[in-house]
Image 1 (cartoon, helix red, strand yellow):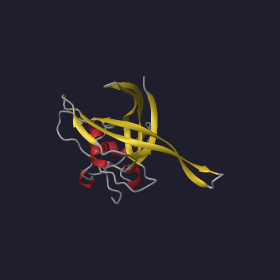
Image 2 (image 1 turned 135 degrees about the vertical axis):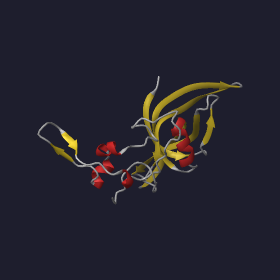
Image 3 (image 1 turned 180 degrees about the vertical axis):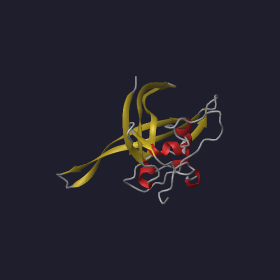
Image 4 (image 1 turned 60 degrees about the horizontal axis):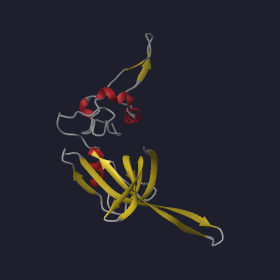
Length: 183
C-alpha cells in the first residue's frame, strides 16, 4: 500500500543515478525534513525532530533530478510513501521511502531556472502532457504562454464555440516550441 505525501526538506546525500538491467534510469538520495516551531517560553525558534526519507525517482524524472540537484539543496517532493521493514546480518530497521512523482527546488530559499528538455529519437514519442513533449503551434491556443504573448486569440462565431483565429507562424517559435514572451 502507498500513501500520497508531500515533503519539504534538504538533500543530505549526493543524488546517485543508476541504470537497471533493462536500461531504466533510477536516481536516489536522502532528504532530511525537520519541524521548526516558535517556543514562547524561550522566545525563540527551535528545531523539532528530523525525519529522514530515501527519495527514489525513475526514468526521465531520475535523469533530471541527477542533473538538477546537489547535496544541501532545499527541495519539494511529491510522491508515494512506502514504509518497509528490513533486516541485514542480524540488524533490523525501518526504511521510509518516497517514490517521487514530482520534484523541484524550494523557491523560498533561492532562485531556479527551468530548462525544458526535448527527447531525442522517435522510439518513444512524448505525449503532450509528458515531460519532454514538443508543443506545436496548434497547441499554443491552450498554452498559458500563448495567451500572455497574444499568439492566439479566440472569438466566438455564429456557428458555435470559440475557434482559433490566428496561429503563431513557426518562425516565431523558440527551440522548445513555445512563443517567446516578447513576440
